[in-house]
Each structure stands twice: as C-alpha cells, then as structure tokens.
Amino acid sequence: MLVPVSTILALALLVFPARAIGNNVQMTLTSDYNSHGLTRMDYSGESNSRLNLSALESDSYTVLQHPRFSNHRVRVKKTMFCDPTVNVYTGYLDVDAGAKHLFFYFFESRGDPDRDDVMMWINGGPGCSSSMGLLMELGPCNIDMNANSSNGTLWNPYSWNQAANVFFLDQPVGVGFSYADYGESIQTTEEAAKNVHAFITIFFETFTQFSGRPLHLSGESYGGRYLPVFASEIYDQNMVAKREGRPQLNLQSVIIGNGNTGISTLYLGRYEIECGTAALEKPVQSISNCVRMKIALPRCQQRMQQSCFDQFDLINCRAAINFCDSEISANMWASGRNVYDISKMCVGSDLCYDEVTAIKEYLDMPRIRELLGVETANNFTSCSPEVGANFGIHMDKYNTPTQFHVAGLLDRGVRILIYAGTYDWQCNWVSNKMWVDALEWSGSDDYGRTPWRNWTVRGRVVGEVKATPLLTFASVRGAGHMASAPSRSSFCAFVDFVAGPTRQT
Image 1 (cartoon, helix red, strand yellow):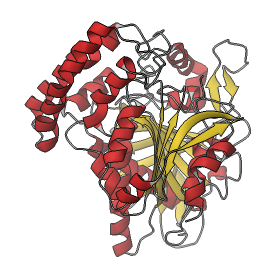
Image 2 (tube, one colour):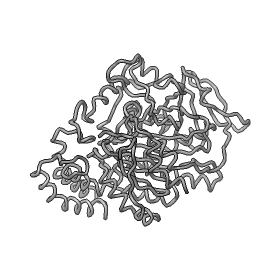
Image 3 (cartoon, one colour):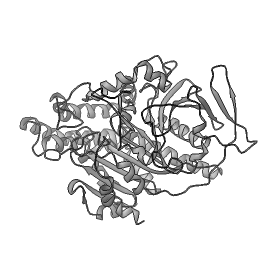
Image 4 (cartoon, helix red, strand yellow):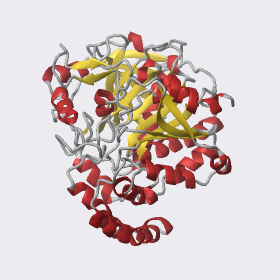
C-alpha cells in the first residue's frame, strides 16, 4: 500500500500553532538602478515606506541588502513559473561579498498569502537540489513524465503552498543552480546555517508584509542534520536580537521527513528494514547475508560509540563507518533495490528515480533557465558529488550528535515533527523512532508515557503516531524516503490523530 503524505505541511501548521514574537517592523528603503539593470534597495531610515513582493519586476532582479549582513545580499524577481494561481518569485542569495550565489524559489500561498505562515524546504544529500522536492514531491507542480502538458509540469493540488508561503532553497553552493565565482565551497552545516539565517532575516525585515509571521523549517534526508542546526542558529540569533531590541524571526517549528538525525541508530534500523519485517511482510535480504550482518552489528555499534560519539576522532570514526558500511550496508547497495523505497528496484540515476533525470533535463532547457533568471552557465546539478565529498572530509554527519540540537530546541519551546515512510532503508523509520524514543529533554518522560495511536485515511490505517505538545513522531505506511510525494490522502484524518493533543495546549 503506497500512502505518501504530502499534507504534512497543513498538519504541521496545526500541530505547531503560531505564537507572536515581537512587533511588525517597518523598513525604510530607497531604490536606484545600476548599470546592470538591477533595482537596488538600501536602508535609509527617513520615511515609512514598505516594500511589497507584488511590486517586484519580472524582467530584472531587485537587490536587497541589510546593514547587519554586509557580505550578503538577496536578489529577487517575479517569475511566471509552475503555479499560475499564485505569485512566484526566484532569485539568489549572494554571500561572501558576492562570491557565492544560492538559488531559491518562493511560492505565495494559495490560501491567504497575506496571513499564512512561511515555510522553507530543503532537500538533503548533502548536495541535492531542493528543486527535487519542488518538482517531484510537495511543490505546486510536478515534472510531467508523460510529456502531455504544454509547459512540462503538472499542477499539484496537494502542494504545501495550499496553506503556506513556501521557499525552496538550493544550498550550499554547487547545488542546483547555486554556484560560486571562484570555486569556493561551504563544507559544514554550521557554516551553511549562518547563510540561511542571513537569507531569512534579510527577506523578513525587507518585505515587512511577512514580519512576525510564523516560520517553519522543513526538509528531508540530510535535512535531519541541516534543519536542527539551522533552527538553533536562528534561535540563538533571536536571543541576541532580543537583547539588542531588534525584531526576531518567529521560529515555530522544525519538520523532518526521513531524516538522518540520529546516526547512532542508523545501522540497527537498516538491519531491521532488510532482514526483518519492519517494512515488508518478508525480509528482502538473504539469510546468509543477514546472519553476517547480525554478527557484525555489535562491533559496528561499539566502534561508532567509541570513536564517533563518546569522543569524536576523525580517523577512527571514519574507520568505524567504513566497517559498518562494508558489513551492514553493502548488501543492500549490491541488491539493485531502490534504497529509498525497498518495494521497488532502482531505475534511472543513482537516486533510483527516472524523475530525477527528467527534472535535470527540464531545468536545463534554455527557456526555463531564462524564465527563472538563472545566471550561471553551468548545467543544473541534481546532486553534487563534490559537495558531498566536501562535507565528508569534515565528517559533518558524525562529528556532532545532531539530536542534541533537537533536544535544545524542544527545551526552548520550538516544536518538532519527525515523520518517516516505512519503505525507506536509507534514513529509515526504525532508526528515527529509536533516537526519538531515547532523546533526553525536559519532556522525555511525558513523551514516553504517551501512547501510540493509529491514524486512518478513508477508513484504512495508514500510519502510527505519538504526539505531545512539543514533539510528534509519525510513521507513514507504504511510503518511501520521499514521503512528501503527491497524495490524495486526506489531511483532515491526519490532523484528527496527530494534531489533536497539541491543539488543546
């Protein structure tokens, strides 16, 4: 049974109700046109004019700068792309004095864009473009695999912008249409977090129509590493802003689908997915391979605990991971199955979906690049091996237990939703459940006492959920790694089971 849930956004906006922070702040701007035809917006402080997104041009970028981020600027333009029912914008975040350029898409809400929340979505990797989330998962349109549409995409009635204004950000540089002028790179999540905070701050403080709106950070896969760190950076910088009497970002929640947050439980979960019945009714792996994996698991866990978690040692941790990959993961990679949905065989690219190749071909079309305002001559990059290698050099996935960030956010009142499709092997639901159950935070006893409940769609059980006012975990039966793919599932049923307890708080 395939029941992916693309309505998690609407759920999340109910699970994570808005709490106003600060006051709306009016920004003063002056504009001029430079020799490149770009509109430049600078802060002056002499009048009370507001800049509204709808006032942007479609044939040139408007440049936004902020005095506290002298090495950053945002360029944004109106774009007739993907969803004809709403205003759409694309642009770049320029960082490091303009040497690096992060591409983004922004879709206003189909509901009430002047009142609805704001959400940022990122894909994982590290090094994969968020256009995959846009064009094959939760975005306003999906790639047309049958080439029946006039513009190459199909309108998605279950898009997350049904209920929120949504960003899709390609980060770090080298991903999607993001690029660097001189080959610079970003190699750690902590470094990337500073750029994400700057981007969101410049946007909110410039387009004052969004000031004070609830902000939700969402994503999947390596987003389980990215998002808790990004949210922590935003929260910590909010505390600085509060002390200095400046406006704060109204961070409300972090939403992670099939994330890799709890690395310590990853291999245990993978074993259960392929050698147990946690995903399918019968194990997909051979008995001989499962026996070998079972014998190797204790050594894998011991080496990881000693070298990656008790005291991080880059060389020894890398050796531990290499051992675990060789003894626990190699058999699945060799099986030809789709590691993101073990009910299927791998097709197309390394990511096992034909849609990935189709998206690359679509976004590399000259007319689409021109429509979006793409500047780089480089081809679109679905997932960058170079970016992945750069993060791997620093062992970014392992050098800091990211669940500590999750605990810190929960203790400070930021709501967390973890959801996972049961057919995923790569960042599986068993692993996610294990680290969430073991999470040490002020509400852990309450979470432990909370019972699991079924949730249904049209009378059929499609997942299990445990929900407390701050932390919610949901499994999605029959969904894979991309559990946010388009679905006809009723979000109302999901809300009835998941949002009920938190709506009472």
